[in-house]
Length: 79
Image (cartoon, rainbow, N blue to C red; front, top):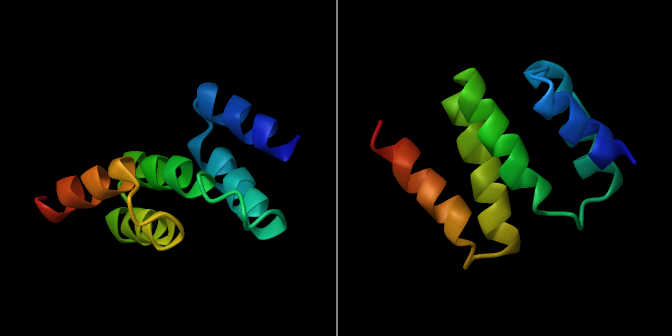
């Protein structure tokens, strides 16, 4: 339910509220590691590269083969 709310907030352009909601999802359901990708993308959109990198790294810790997280880290490393 909170995940759907976070997605709706993101879709409506309420980036800060969506970030807060996704962080809440991670706290409540740590096994839902894909949320790190969504959170990383939003943080990147907001211009917070260090926080985005931390989220992508958390995704890779859970799934070392995740191509999206690797691509995002490569992209941010070139900036």
